[in-house]
Image (cartoon, rainbow, N blue to C red; front, side):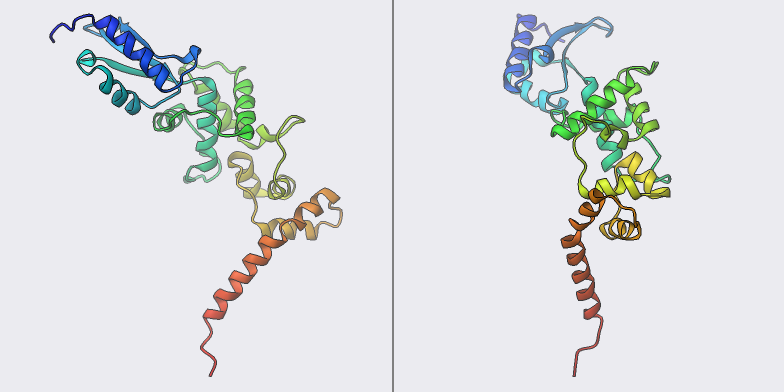
Length: 246
């Protein structure tokens, strides 16, 4: 590999330019450093969260392609990013053979993060859940590196405990009813994946509960428009199965 003039200076300039381009905060700015463990030693760009590796490679190539020859890339993740990935994997992933209890591994989280730009919380609710998950995982020891304790906490406890407590964001009406009335596998799906009951299941549960609280009755009544729409759609579908009137 041919020597590159003023390589260290040029790579550090590229790192600074990328930090500015992607708006990385001071504690997560991009660094150009020598990887002493590589044989032979090589330069690499290191950063936390922020843009994906693909974005950084493309952005860097536009700034100083010559200086990048042989440069490595290392994107690391914050605890908050791991928590967000664990939450999204459990909440949005496709169920496996055990549809509510398959869990999330640190490898699952990393694969999701590797493809995610700026992997932070998308709203206050997700921010609260991620913070609760990170805090709950702090009591766990781990021999498998960053993110492992967070993923094991999410796997063992599920997601619904992250939405409990005085400072937790409010549940939606269907979530409130699911928290109260889900039983068996439906309860496990809610606990692990935040999968709610259907509107019809939730409404029927409140209707059958003569001691339902005013809060739960009110929540059930908010489901009426959704129930009416579902029934109208079902009735229209059935009507289409009838022979045309003569």
